[in-house]
Image (cartoon, rainbow over all chains, first blue to last red; front, side, top):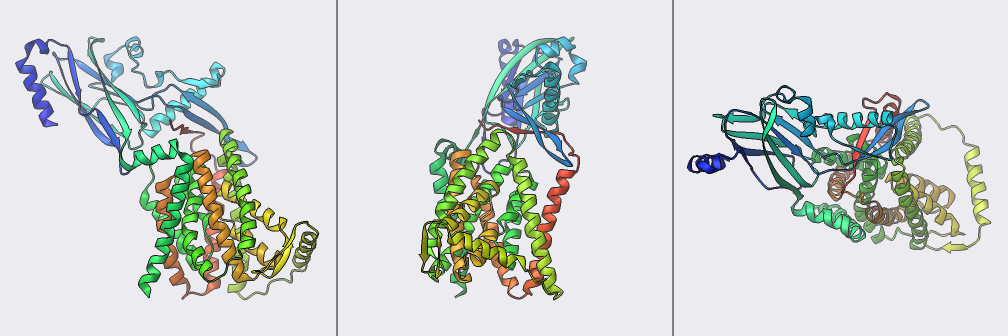
Length: 246
Length: 299
């Protein structure tokens, strides 16, 4: 991490032409591997800007299809009632800023750059009446915020000497695989004046990846081999202590 | 979803411990405990079936070595339970698409655990307080009627290992019913199979235990393969941790069980089963904290 900051600082000092660029962001990594013991990770994005300004970093996960259900009453019991599919919304949406976004950008700019947590377009299947779909939409955003997949944080970006900045981003343990976008915006006087987009990939790795691929690409073969393995393990675990006891 | 591996190991060990203490399969406790943890019902049911295939393999081998398996009876039961299991897996798929699998599983479990728990509680309380059971006049009559009805069914055949003769349709239907239950609930069905084999099919107890285990092993194994193939719902890590926990728990329970009075042990298990059933009913009666729930489709 320190090496990246030093390299970036040196590059800025030695290369004045490059320093004319309004914004440069270097994500800490281009790939996050999910292994069996993955419990989330901390990511940093290091960047530089030309002078004093506010910053907004938008971290967007790949889109996902979610199935929402609404509890309904059946006699005295609460059961899972109506269901609705929602597609198109990002699996994760983190908004980081140097100040509350509503204070540094007017509503129109926030909407233009997708900086409103509950303003993400969501596709409902099947199509519903506007008032009905609004309930499902609101429920979706409530759940996403409650689960920590959609949130806004105005403390995660540290700025050094109005030039360098470091953003600390905490990724949760249960991540959707795919391409994540890190979009950084420089804000001055209520306007976005600089813009940079970076990407990183989240993928399954190690045994987790092999098991996942096998379970989905060759599900019957996987089921057969795994069940045999389970039977063998149970047999060995059952038999082993008997032998030792003799 | 993220689950605490130590908690799953503990659940496996707890159910294994109770199974070892009292000598029951315990599959009917694993699935509700996994559902309480937040694991989707279809994953709980399917991984539970894989876990039972694992834990039943060692015990089945021992019964085979001791000649306690009636293979002819076992194979007919197995044909029935594979057909029932296959039907159950596709029924699970249909219920999943309709968003009703969780509801069906919870209702089935409330009925099942309520029935098993209350029956065991009454029986063990009677044993602990030495109260004689009321003379059951109707039960033997019903069993006798059932046996007469079975004698009229086609495909009568003899089962030399068990020393009985009956229609192949009897074990076939029994196996099919248990197979459907394994697919929908992740249970082995020993609690139905064993009494029916002893009281209705009149098989010797020793052969009943071995044959029931043989049928359970291959039914849960087939259901595990089918759930993985059709619904992609077997979580291998979950199942392996459960096997590890339950085998260790069973051994500990069996050692302790040999030193404790059987009727008091059955009372403990009955109380646990009733508590789980009550927890499920209370959860369904209370207004949920969140009216909306969400699951993410794996892509």
